[in-house]
Length: 487
Image 1 (cartoon, rainbow, N blue to C red):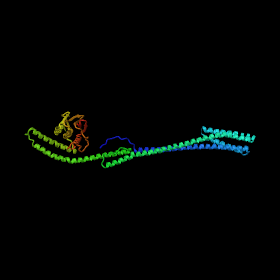
Image 2 (image 1 turned 90 degrees about the horizontal axis):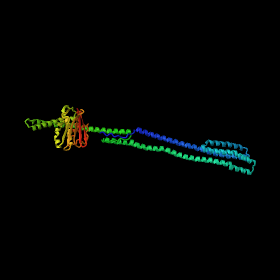
Image 3 (image 1 turned 180 degrees about the horizontal axis):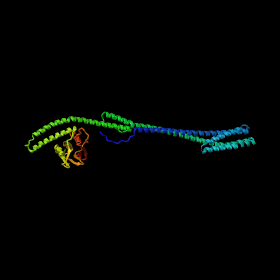
Image 4 (image 1 turned 30 degrees about the vertical axis):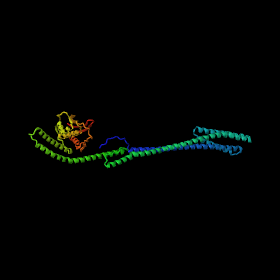
C-alpha cells in the first residue's frame, strides 16, 4: 500500500546537532573565561591605582611630618644652641627631597603633577625664608622678636604650606572616592559579565532538554508505539517523520517495512484466494461442461433438416451458445493457469458482435442502445478470438449493469500509430474503485451475484495479448475503458 510522498521539513543529523551543542558549550566557557579575565583585569587595575593613591597620601604625610621635624631642628639650632641640629636639619632636607621625587614619580595626570609641584615650590620657599627669620631673631633675641618669629611662622610659611598640602590631600581623597566608585562599578560589571555565561548555560540546559525531548525522546516513543501497533497487526500505523535526521530515516524505514509487510500480507491473502479458485474453478468447469455436452448432443439429435427455418435457427443458436460457453469455460481456466494465445487473423467486428449476442436480453431489458463506430469495419486483426471475445463480453456486461434505463453504450475502434485502440463508454455513475492491473485475484464486485472475475480476466487477457487496458471515470459521462493492442 504505497503512501503518498509528502515533503517533510529538512532535519539536521544528530552529529550536526551535537556539534552545535558542543560549540555553544565551548563558547560559554570562553565567555566565562573572558569575563573572569576582564574582572581580574579591572580588579588588578583598581588595586594598583588604590595602592598608588595610598602611597601618594603616605608620601605627602611623611613630607609634612619631616617638614615639622626639620622646623624643630631650626628651633633647636637657633633657640637652644643644639650643635647637632644643623646636621639633623640637612638629613630631613634630603629625606623630604626624596619624598618629593617619589611623589613626582607616582603623580599621574596634570592635576596631580601640578599639586605636587605647588607643594614642592612652597617647600622651597620654606627652605629659603625660614633660616632668614631665625637669623633676624638672633640679632635681637628678646620676647618681642620671638613672638614675631612664631607669628610669622604660623601665618606665613606654615600657613601656605598647610594650604597646599591640604589641597593635595583633598585631591587624593577625591581620587580615592572615585576609585572606590570605580571598584564598585567594576565589581558590578564583573558580576554581570560572569552571570551572562551562567544565564546562557541555563538557557542551553533548557534548550537541550527541549531538543532532546523533541528530536530524540518523542520520536523514539513514537517508534516504540509503532512497533507495538505493527506487532499486533495494525500495519496501517505510521511513525511520524520527525526528530533528528537519523531518527527520521529510521521512521521512514519502519513505515516502509510496514508497507512491505502489508503488501506481503495482501499478496498472501490473494495467493490463498487464488489457490482456492484454483481448486474451485476446475470443479465448476467440469460440472458445467458435462451439462453443456448433453445440451449440445440433444440439440444435434433434434436438428432435422425438415424442420422449419425458425426451429433450425433456434437449434443452431443453442449449439452456438453451448460452444461459446465451452470456449469461455476454457478461457476461465486460462485465467488461473498460464496459457499461450492461439493467434489468427480475425475480423474485429465479428469478435465484437459475437460478444454482444449473449447480452441482447439484458440490453433489451434496460432499453440500452449500443452505438458502434469501427474504422474500418472490415478490419482484421491478429489476436486470440475467444480470449478477446470474452474480454468484450465481461466489459460490456459491466457497462450494462452500471448504465441507467434508456441510455447508450459507445463502442469505438480505430487504428492509431500501428496500435488498435478500443473505447467503451457508458453513462453510468462511474466506478467506485480503480482496478489494479497487477491484481492476481478477483476484484471487488458491485453486483449481487458477481464473482469479481470480469476485470481481472480482462487484465490478464490483455497482458497475454501484449495489450493494455485503462479505466477512467468521466465526469457526467460514466466510465471510459480504453484498450490498446499492437498491430
